[in-house]
Amino acid sequence: MKIGAIICSAIAVIWVLLALLQLWFSLFSLDIFIKLSVSAALLFVIVLVLSLVIREYISDKKMKENGFLDE
Image (cartoon, rainbow, N blue to C red; front, top):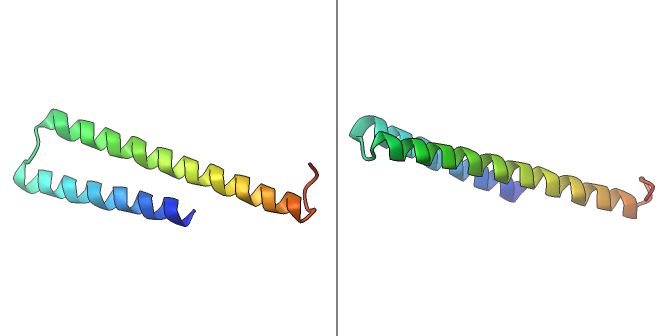
């Protein structure tokens, strides 16, 4: 989960920096900026969901190994 949180944080920070640059300097056309924003949002959600699923899988596996869950 730590790696997922770091990646999600990096995506968010990079997107905020791009948004601020776009606000002040208009580096990209509107179409490109919207595409970048949608891509960043989708990537953020995918990384977050995958990290949560992997964490749950590892947690369940450890609980089964320790006898807390039935198989």
